[in-house]
Length: 314
Image (cartoon, rainbow, N blue to C red; front, side):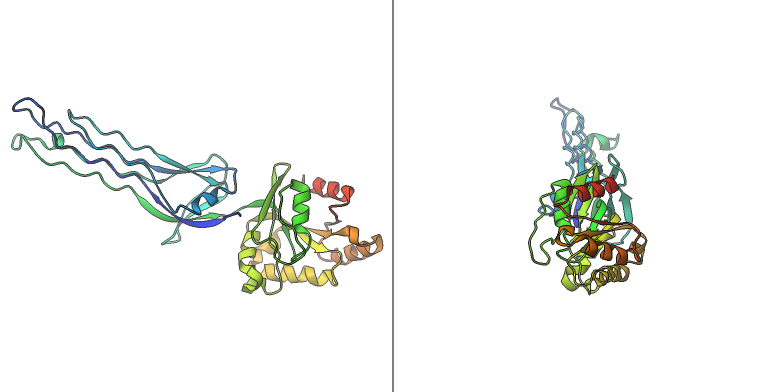
């Protein structure tokens, strides 16, 4: 299952405590060292789109604390930084204010999110002519803490959309061997399935129905994924009683959800073409050309049609 939005707490490491210590020799002065700095928290973008899944069972991530100061003015060891991998396309949003901290728009981008706390001062730092034997030290300070929403804004280059049972998952499996679940009932796909063809990501978006933009059939959950796709592959089953109505239903729900989706590049796929004769397919294609000039009849059982689709994807 793909997680594309999740809340998480990130904490910089606490600084180590300062040390109260005196030398072993008589009249030895204070020699307590300072604590080490706490580790920082970084986010690093990677190509794996499933990386947000790591936060499903663990919600709090903290860098290592600094070690306490030692005797003989030894400073404690700094805590190790924490580097957390997130999918490329992730946006980091402050949960409280809605402020965008950062966007990870390319693989390898690294961003400091939380600073570690400073180490406390040992009693050596408090020596003075007036107080030659200070018995005080300060604790390390806490690291920065941020409660953020990690939002995967772009999940795919191509998105297979359409009504339930329009053949989207079958196409994804044929193109990418993604292993998406297939069955003869609606809503087999409850989260986007992803596959890779020619280094491009294809998403099988769960089927939409009339009223999806109002939440019907888990529609609002499904529609948000389409916001994050570059090019739409609109699947219309050739055995539909009314392909034009099917198309208009999906387009209407997209428009109600987000007007900007209407501006995305689109291709119509007349799916399951093995179930219809050539005359029927030509009739459907002619009707659909009123809405989109790029149309292809395709079947997972028709090698030539799959190759044509692959050419388009390239």
